[in-house]
Amino acid sequence: MPLETFFTVSEQVRFFLLSVVLGAVMGVWYDVFRTIRILVPSARKPLPTAVCDVIFWVSSCLVLFLFSYNVSGAVLRGFMVIGSLCGFVLYLMSVGSIVTGFFRIIASGLMKIGAWCQKKSAVFVRNGKNPRHTKKL
Image 1 (cartoon, helix red, strand yellow):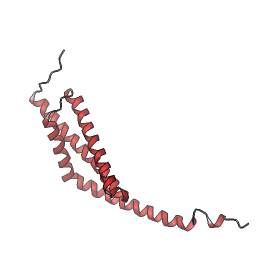
Image 2: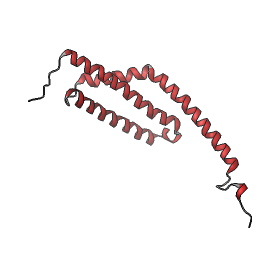
Image 3: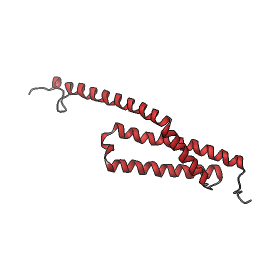
Image 4: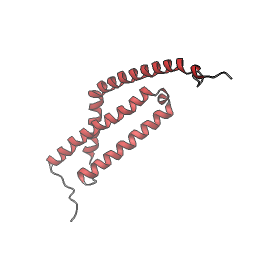
């Protein structure tokens, strides 16, 4: 029984809308990498940024391939790619800026908590030794 490659208009519309949702999910995945750049200062350098971008794009292509495999029988249609790009751009231009702002607030709060904990731990531990527990021989 051969695989049917013709889809009705309603099926194509459904695939397109699903690919728009997939693009929005990819936007959330991209925000994860943006949050890593916010939290980890060394991730802002060119090499870690490039590695994060490669990981993002390879994983997005893999997800798009798996999506097309499961939804349309491994037939990647142009409108699916366009729908994913539209969903990604719509997410970044609308909710993405709000989510990124929320992640920035969380990141700055975590950085402040981390700096406070580091400052407080310096009072108790000096050079890897606790001054209260050092014994004089």
